Image (cartoon, rainbow, N blue to C red):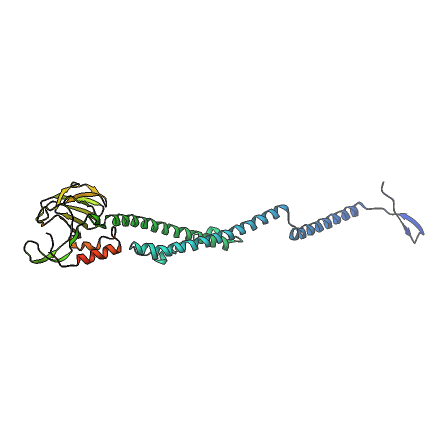
Length: 323
């Protein structure tokens, strides 16, 4: 039960009961609620500025983690860019030089992307600059990898062709050193054994006993194995590709047939003295683009430096040829 309150009336010199008006009660209650609501709003506003909710703390942690991941991504991209730059440098200055390919221009390797704004959808966020920059670097890095990958594919094909070329070029002596009696005559002006007149000797003569093995000096296809060429007697011609052809003349007999594929070092025939020949020997010639060239430059695959120097010395003597 509510307490009854009185007040002292000076005129009547007596206490009188305080009568509450219902309207005033409602007014006071409304003012109290209004004040409470106002202070509550102020409290919530201040709290929202200085106190984080669990959800806000979680979102903040996620944002910090995302920023950290972007920083780590940029560091990894920087490392990848350094590695790719090193590969590109070796590609231009070693691989492509070795295989005689034109270097890839720097502007082609590191070109960006022109035209429309590719990153418009990433604008307007708190970390838009970081996100856009990371995406740009990643796109350029991917493009550089594609360019480098295509270059290495080209180098691989060139290396394969180079390997075939090195295997095809006549590179060994067609008669083993231990089977030789001597190196009779070299490439150049020599005395003809029949007419005694000096004339051009287009190959090298290796003297050896009849039946001595003769070996293919490089990979290729036998294009001739017959005796229908004037003066050569039984002879073999091997097309090595790349413009190279080797010729082996005055054979005793063949060990290959026309259109047969041979590898360097394969036994293809035996020394003889058929055709225009004074004694058993192998007459050996090399053609490059249908022009005869000196075979002395094509023995790097079977002779030591000392053996080659001796061969060079003997080949330079202006003696009599055997054919």
